[in-house]
Length: 368
Image 1 (tube, rainbow, N blue to C red):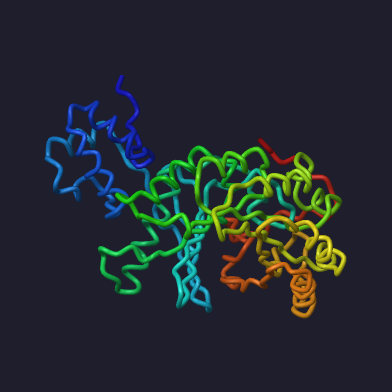
Image 2: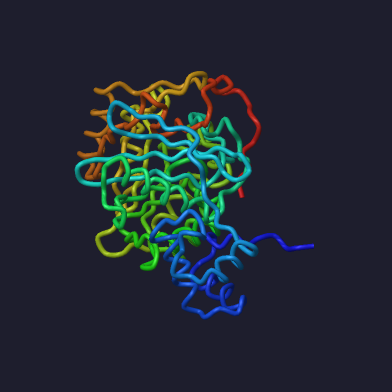
């Protein structure tokens, strides 16, 4: 009985070298193979013309490289494009391309669905189906690079994407091992060669994993905070029942930051839930002692979830209170609202999320 093919796109360059040498090939072939997959974005072994026909035939028998297939494309009036991808087993994930004059940013997914159960988030209504492999995480980047090159008539040898934010479907630190491999591939000089300064990973607050993340990667950290006290956060973010805000802030204070770097705190403003003056004053105290900036996001409404967005003047007042307290705070422009591509709206479905009244019990989140 033959063994399962190895997904070589999920291997680091070191692991790929070990695989290639194990097939009786020279070690330098691994770098050629790696570059074809992750620098040139090849989609088949037949494209890898500087590899011998015999080696390519062997690879077809022994290996595969995970990719994703475009299932749906939606374009917003603001230029945002949401892509829905199908994986090898028919699962659906989404990523969002946000171009601007200064940068071309891709919001990347790390899981099919999510286990964290945040009450205001459409992705949470899916539950967690499975983790994405390193290859499937990286494949979103390769696929959108191809799309952007074709749509914007950019030379095929260039990597048009400039920034990556891991804020799509799933909790990145819940899939840390695969995320870490994917980050290594994306930052490799023999791959897309993204700078760690241009990659941000967001977490709802898996406290033990924040320490590992800081120790084992160099990319930027964003915390999805969304409440100024435990009473509110317990209700809207079940993860807070395991790790309280004090635990989370202590992990942030210990997080290793290079000179001039800051942690980003994401705070989704929901009318009557977390947007009062008292919330703003408490938030200012929470982030004291942490090199930080706060991104305020006016909630993107999801039908049936029972939450509503904060009005513009309330958001401005909230920001002003933070500003007077010496906190760098910004009201982040929402992109792609008209195609359900904005923060908290990725759900892979055209159906409305199942309605669960605010305050009612729901299945507990699977927190590692």
